[in-house]
Length: 595
Image (cartoon, rainbow, N blue to C red):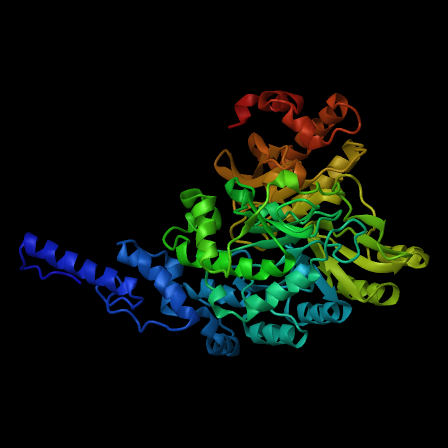
């Protein structure tokens, strides 16, 4: 409500106060706002699940704040109701414009111009498990409507790229025909649910995470209110086995633990609740002290998401993740809010009352390993920087059918596993993989090499991460003979899709001044790790042209081999016990070149 210019200043202030009071009363009563804060009548307020989001937005408007452009776009048009527009755009061969570029991501379609004048489609694959039939179908989609390849992501997911505007509906319906979906895989939604890659076959696991990821997957798909959150949201389930899933880098991490007799909860397997992980913003998930029985995980996840829906920031995208609600409120206040959406209080148990988990096999996602099932093995296949041609996808599907259980498992390390292979078939599997140009073993460099999409397919990236990762691996393999694997993560921008902070060595893409030009380069971080070894990498060099990066890292790895405390000392431990200045000196990087 705005005052007439002819009113006195005192009258204007009175009218503004009156309007604010009315707005506050209506919001408190759950009624829609009469005005949207810009002197224009609001659209009719939605009811049902969509009304929760409108009410959350109204709280900020009532407080006199301005919604972000993305929130305004969701307020004006619910992206879940855009099917007719998507179909019309496809029929016209037309890409979205303006805020529709953002809204289209709710359907898993990313218009990635100017990197490519095309869509990328991201899927939802709970726990990263695909059937061979689905793999063949995806290969057909990528061949007919994409660039003839698929990319494995760091959320154990797949992306199809180079999709024409006219082909979007064919891609979306083709996925549905395969029993897959891309709904909610982008924008302000719960992203792909990750679970232990060896769920159900790990000799050391405490619990199989597959039923939980599947149950939460369907819960999300069938609860409309869980779409359109203040910002994206990540959830992971760790079953306590040999392979990590990086649950402590997620907004919600469920970490399986064993509890013995004599505690305040009955003996058994529980999940410790972790909240607020976002390493790109400098935080791992915080242990809340809460323990959950497996059947309590889904309702608790839904309650946490609901609390975030209600109270996450809708005005500043940089501060709209769960971490910032926790920073502002503290864990106890947030958990109290979560409990308002649950039938009972959350149970607490100190971490030292839980049985320590078994050691993690940091690179157990590569090579041949025995399963819990007698006579069966899984084969960890190395996929260079996560990219597979459609011929390789079809070939892997055939290998899984002929020698396994007709399933493939994706990992957060951008590679895949073929489970349930009889020991007698291992030689045949090795031969088949070699015929596909893939390997079941890797050097210490390639086994932990992770790269985001890079600037060949993402407008945010400053560097060609995938191409440069392969060039870097080739150089290091010639120069350094490592006797244990390390993780090298290359990410093209501060969004950190490749999680550079948790790699032994992390590279963050940047533009580097070179005379009047800007060339591709990296800021270099060392000493990162997740899980029980967790810690954020430290920056030791800034704005290094990529041409100088391979030899700089070779010198650093040489220094590690010379100065480590025995062959058993991992790289992250070596890096952490040296100062930044010492590490710069060891790799021959002058302090003046660093920030």
